[in-house]
Image 1 (cartoon, rainbow, N blue to C red):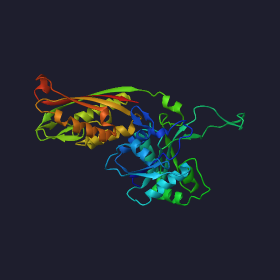
Image 2: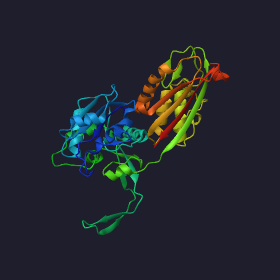
Image 3: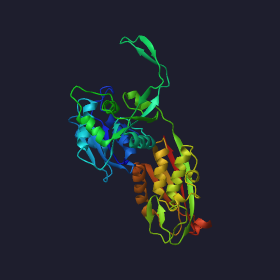
Image 4: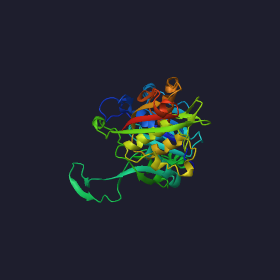
Length: 376
């Protein structure tokens, strides 16, 4: 089974428990909740199309909340139903007209802190079993109580899990399951329907950060902030392209390296790994390993993003290069990083410096990049 997938982002409810306004339209740190819930998926190359459900009469509000989405990924808005089950059914029905994907992921539009690593785990498991959900164990004792709140009995929590989204399923099986849905049927989540139709669902490791915004108090929950620093330097040689942030620059020389030598992406990778305390680029992609020979550094970055349980907040980069005017290209470099990371360009800083003629950098014999990142 291919990993190519379509995404249904559910936001068809009225946010009645939130207590004032539709929660998906609320901004946190300058970005709407619905947009933040979508953003990690946009960085994945196997995402083929996106469907967002919205409440009746709120199409324009949803368009504004989503903002601009990458032009190469088709995005469609579908009116939701009276329940979450019916909203997802509308999204699945719309997707059934397309066949350029083999998996369907369903994600709550009010889960803005999902990580790329969590998504990747779900996709990998669904490729094998046909269905996958991220889940967490219960850290506390579990009790069953009466409607009046009186505890009736203790519940054995072994084997019990708290299930999150995204929930990922094989395309044809999920389409068939929703097509067979009767008017009287309603489910807490898509996995319940999938299981009722004989599907298999694998529970993979979830993430405590992947909370669903339900009450306003959820917006106040603090998350761990970390800073990472990375730097990289490469000798400049003839007959090599100068790669910078995923794009080639018109320089007469390029980086001498085991991979394509993109110093900016290498420094960024080191900064991300440093923030997560997961070693450095040499540990993950050792130069003696031939499979990384001449590899595109964008692939290395994608690999790192797939294992990080973190959200990038902003990036500050400094590139030192002599004998080549880099400043006219910094906007293009920022746009490239924005696409690779699915991060707003106004959270990415790229500065061009020279070394004032000093040492190998000042003589134009090498290029250097330094990057600081802030992550949650």
